[in-house]
View 1 (spheres, rainbow, N blue to C red):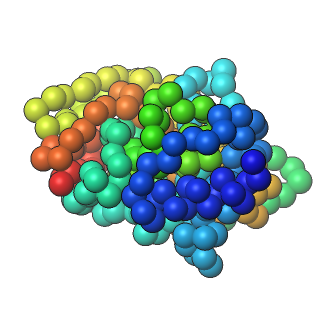
View 2: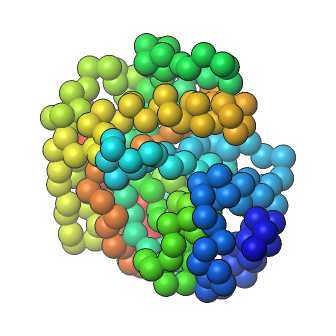
Length: 250
């Protein structure tokens, strides 16, 4: 199955709000194919528009990260409201993102950690609204999930801090409220320090889009895992010392 056909199926699923039954489980065999599909879907849905953010993450630092672009249309300022049906919402995640204060363009020499850190203007609390275009998404092949923007539906952007270098990530706490439930964790980021994901993403975007740009937001993965959410829930992510974000699910 060609990548342009896969992209057309995913675009239709988004526009028609009709979850796609995966027609060929083996069609997205590699990350390269998945990213090619992402680019084609993005070009069809948001032509001429640069990503406002990127999601990047992995279950541990022993696994290659995965990435997906987020267009301005899917960036929601906290406090926000979101429709579960429109997103085909499957859950929410409490995350910390980095906002870049300078460009990280493509270059032959890898960006050093110190250069990456110098390009970060602030750390910001976000809530990822995880939505899917795939029917039976839990059982869908990993390649299809990546092609479907790694299950990104939208990103709620809250408050943050410019004094992010002072954060001890091993002791950083999070309180995640979803309706009546509360999830808490300390030092729970899969990479320990979420900044460790940025060199990989800078290389990835350098090869794919020409690099990361000033103002880009990079959200770095869940601290308490994917939490179920439903219409009527007020969702609040609080990272003491950093900030908070909130969204009402309709």
